[in-house]
Length: 420
Image (cartoon, rainbow, N blue to C red; front, side):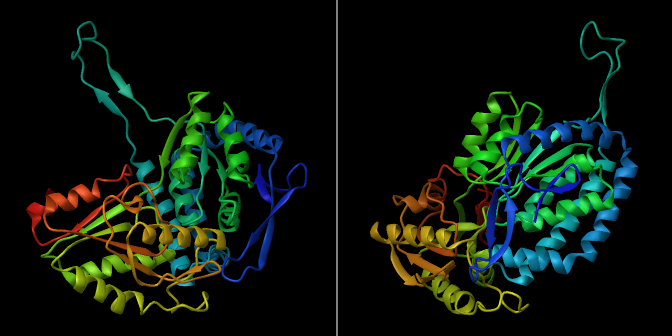
């Protein structure tokens, strides 16, 4: 499959390619171009010119074009979901849901931009401006660089692409190296729907080179990245050279506090959702901070009712609900982190088995706030580290031990405790 530059499917200028493999069975799916700096600069230059054309398409016409895109999403739903499962290793039920979320995001973007009104400021609020009418009008930024991660590539691409395009921007998209195929197909459908071709550029290659080349380019108005902290710091350093605006959503070590008065059915179900996408969810719970009086019940029910009942097997079977990690390398890293945490004093009570890119849902008990797993070691896999507390202040102290700040949760019947 080729990358999309100015509406044409294109090889890299030096013909170099990268393999895209199925993490479930290791088979080769496709080869995609490994872009050169020349390819990147050409795509961005074309995007800058095409953005002026796309922005002249009035808002209601943009809405018509993107609604045509919604129709193409419906028409191609099956193919997109299957591609997503094959290249990502997630079950097909999850892939259907992700493609449906792309539809929802674009539909919402259309409506939000249609109602994105300007403002006026009252006259006479500042001396010397008594007769001046001041207004604000929203304008597109220009060319938006969209750097997409591997875990929910279609959904997180849509979060970036939908609002940017509907607002009159051009987008230069860098999909994840490991699984770019679904995003490439989604981009192609935009051209088919009638978006100005040069306003939707899709460049494939390794993030360490292509991502920096994109960010270094002074024609980029903003960089929107979802990824790891190290990637965010690297992109920020490059963006600073041109004072390029950036918006990041990076890693997390998200706490879920489960209080003594919790609805245990709810607690077990919420925690069990960590098995979705094999635990590769940046805003999913990663530290389970459980009141000591209910810990044994919570751990037992979590294992018996949720972890032992996951259905593994053929990822194209709609009943399968647990897949593999994005690669064997990723699973080996989870394995290493689990063993490291055990060496620090945690107790393995369930799981801990790896085979290729598969990593079994795993529960670690006796975790403490002194361990790396409580602080800044994000484990991107189906791991359930259990911490215990006696007082709510102690639970909050454990939750706040990490420098990460992405999401958090609390399960309690006491509204006062929840608000605290």
